Length: 279
Image 1 (cartoon, rainbow, N blue to C red):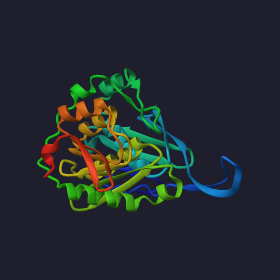
Image 2 (cartoon, rainbow, N blue to C red; image 1 turned 180 degrees about the vertical axis):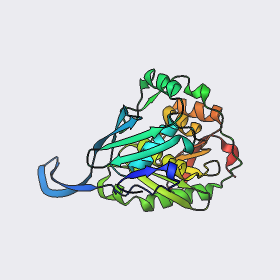
Image 3 (cartoon, helix red, strand yellow; image 1 turned 90 degrees about the vertical axis):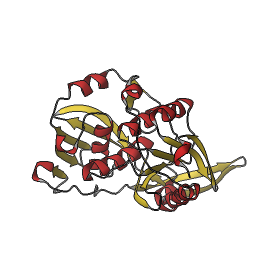
Image 4 (cartoon, rainbow, N blue to C red; image 1 turned 90 degrees about the horizontal axis):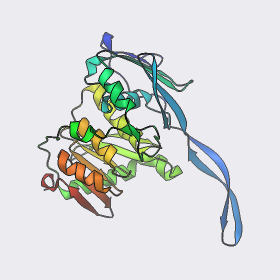
């Protein structure tokens, strides 16, 4: 990668985004029931808009922390159907200064474009432009995986996620996500939006040809229907969160063959669906 450009026709291996997420100081005044208590400096997470262009056409503006934009773009396009395989990604150019990512893709984008235009705004946090089409759940193939995980392994990986969350401890302003095997954490990403953090994980694996069928995804965000549809599309079999799941997410996980775990904290968790993968 040179100057933020990845040219996959030249068989280059993309590197992780070089721009680390940033925190900034903010002077605040703290109050309680007695009135003003103190003035102090707090760390807050940076938020910025990043516009994604596909083959010269503006597609969407994502609100994010502004790091690992190559992974964010690739993961978003893969999960949303604009990319089906790595060879379809011809070129990816990140411009940190302007906050834009230009992507050139081969193949017929007409179907993905038509589906995109029919989508409705969902409850996505940090990515108000995340959409999903009502037939996505029917079009997503059930996830097949021979993965088996013990309860102890799930809880150990959640504890590792918590230890890696330095930016959260400083700002309480990000969602955290890790990709893991039953025995170890492989990759950590965080962002102001839970979908952004997941897209970075997906994009990292897409760009490097890393399979997901034998992996766990662990997040701090809510488990909702659009997240389950996204993960079913990329073949993620095992999803864990410190947070809760919605009713539709549980129904989708059951029909799509995804193990869905919530409230993974304090040495326990709740399995909503796919309990057959838990030893």
